Image 1 (cartoon, rainbow, N blue to C red):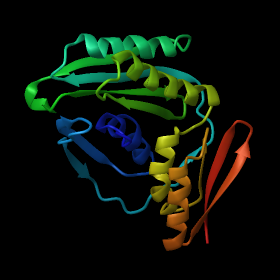
Image 2 (cartoon, one colour; image 1 turned 135 degrees about the horizontal axis):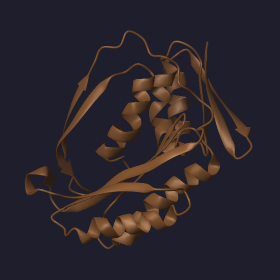
Image 3 (tube, rainbow, N blue to C red; image 1 turned 45 degrees about the vertical axis):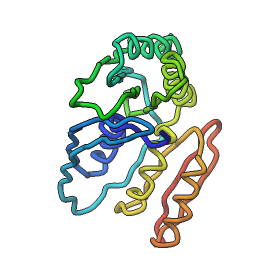
Length: 220
């Protein structure tokens, strides 16, 4: 349940990779849900001669908040309650458009649900996600996703904490110096940075910038 749902990859992670020159098409054949899994996706990755550096220090003005909440083998009021709770957490940020869906039986493996939220800004994409689990109310799931996205927006970071640790390996292989801001450097990110330094001729610098952390990828 700690891994990002496929909609986070589609709406946040892959658009960031596209900015670095990697073109990836993604198609969800079947959604899988925690804890059973069973999801299936098809990826089409275009060849990329070299990666452009990732430079994202300021998100710029907020343009839109959108997202998706879906369930399989559960009633429509579940994703609707997710949306209501998430929207309340994000009150004051302007219009919010979140698609709600009940998947057809062939679209989902087992019973479950998930929500992914995306804040589109002038220079950035910030995301959050929450996955349904037994005993957790739909409102709690929506609040978790909403509060997580609000934390990113309030901090003023260019990348959310999950995109940051996922993009480190690509930034380390880019032609040129990458640098980006996050509200927090996760333990996962610190582990990934250490591991990359053991194999590639790069080093990482982390510097406090007020409420933010600036991560730089330095070659040599």
